[in-house]
Amino acid sequence: MSFSEEFELLLRARYPLLYIPTPEEERLEAEIVACARRMGDRAVYAWDFVDGYRDNPNNAGVAQRNPLQALEFAEKLPANAGGIVVLRDFHRFLEDVAVARKLRNLARQLKARPVNVAIVSPQLVVPPDLSEVLTVVDFPLPTADNIARELERLLAPLAQGLPESTRDELVRAARGLSLERIRRVLSRAIALHGEVRADDVELMLEEKRQSVRQTQILDFYPATEQMSDIGGLDNLKDWLLRRGCAFADRARAYGLPHPRGLLLVGIQGTGKSLTAKAIAHTWHLPLLRLDVGRLFGGLVGESESRTRQGLALAEALAPCVLWIDEIDKAFAGAEGRGDAGTSSRVFGTFITWMAEKRSPVFVVATANNIRALPPELLRKGRFDEIFFVGLPETEERREIFAVHLGRLRPHNLKEFDLERLGYETPEFSGAEIEQAIVEAMHTGFSQNRDFTTEDILEACSQIVPLARTAREEIQYLQDWVAAGKARLASRTSDLTRRIQQQLRD
Image (tube, rainbow, N blue to C red; front, top):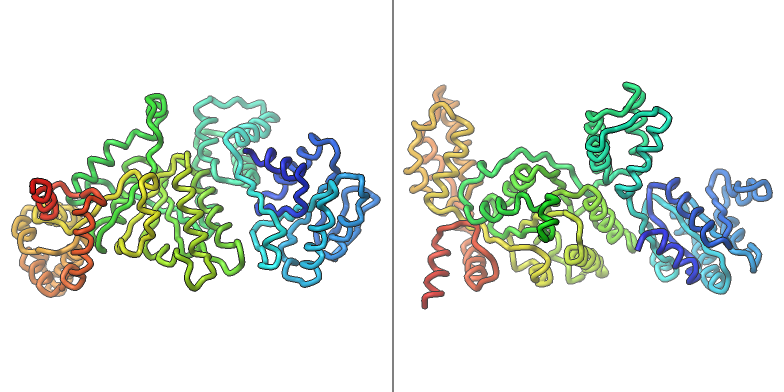
């Protein structure tokens, strides 16, 4: 159901108090006016704190700088006349006891009248005492059709025709931006060279990065890592490479759905975050990092609103990769203890979106502690697959050493004994291998020489791997995987052989 359809339905059902959080005030009010015209029995009255009501000479200056009088205006509208009262930035007054009481009174009085109050605000702020009387209505970002129409409108005075491929690329680049931001970017392009060009896509992408940064919920993360930067994990790599073209139109024509996502489970330092970055780079998709900690706000409904805002933005930017690092820590309190159920509601919003989403947003979540994850997150249908990223085996450690040393010393890689390095570093994770190489480089640099295999092995002897201090957690993870709860990211490992033996027995 579109916003217009839902809004008209709520008007006809006489929902008295509506709350529409959106930064696109102008576009929203145009939609409200269009709805009122279609219904034919509604007049629109807009109020703001500075100017009061000023829709016609009879209302000019009414309730100026007085939010309580703004509500009284709605109350005094003729009983037989329909009306939509739009209150701009009214969230700032909801904590006032008189305003809150007046709103609750209006909620009773307007049920029997064709008058609706719509609070328009750039953010959702609902005090607890008003949560039962306010109905929140989401106003989505512009669709591809909205953007295409706006592009045609701006180009009309220039009598400029755009190639279809350029137009489609501009529309795709603009997805996820407000209409006002899109207008600004296109106006800037026209001011620069008198027309809109194909290379103006970069201006649109820069505006998008700025928009994402300002949400403080999502980060536009640069992804330069490649699959070749990951040592081992052959099963996981093969799985990903088979889905590399699954976002193309020909995949839809073939009947394939969009890939949903991936959960990577394992101890710290085994390459889970690196894999998330490599997926985005390999598939040529933007990488968005969701900081779940930023979702939580102090007011009722604010956390859920931020969650919906972040997910809506990710969908608007699709196709993309949405990376949620250490999701086990983010939703460890999802049972709702100690926070009045906020974590539970945010988690519910998130998993419902995951189960129902149809947009090409590929979710890559990483987790270290599987016991902290709510069971609902592991149910089939949330992710396409769950992979266990274990400690690298001897051959995989050799590959990891080759990746790092090949990047740092490509000219003399053959001078390092990779076989010995892989063999003599049991229980080392990829992160610990990288740290050992850095330590060896410090040793060589301090002695005014290049570092050697012996320096690396000496550094390894000084490191206590996490696998030794977290042996119980690793054993739990391995037992969990052996029970068939996840696939193995590596093709050959001790755990693989253990599972195969269990199957034979």
